[in-house]
Image (tube, rainbow, N blue to C red; front, side, top):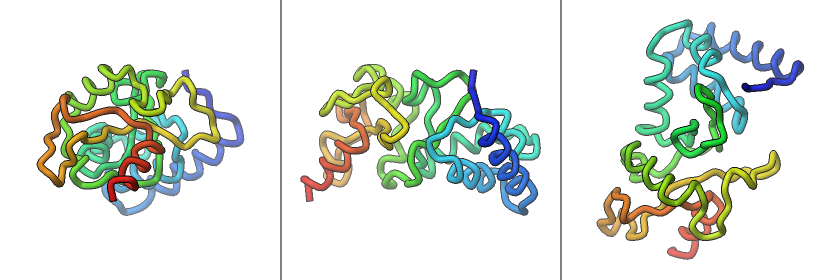
Length: 171
């Protein structure tokens, strides 16, 4: 069950109505709503409403994650603590283009293999608190730019802090 505080609910309702009326495509409306609610639990009902009850809303959310690289998580894509039907935009940033091509099936298996835990610092969502902006990402052991593939064997789970550190050290 997702609990939205009364004041927050009123604010989200106002934002949802504002975005719903815009002359934008469904994907753009969903992205705008998520970017205005980074880190918060967003229900499928909210997204359906923003999409003017268009059935394509779920496909557009998946595209934002898989094709456009937005860190949108669900129960099966990195946040096992989330209820079914709830989404979260973990950070207001897109992943690099080469990370957007990891198939969901591979992403899911790597996260499961690594027990939804950062390989380096052992952080996981059970340790999360509201002041912690981290979420889990996948890192190429052999960098994509050097021919590393999007395979389970070449990917490891890292939190965003460790992932950023790894890339800073590599340059």
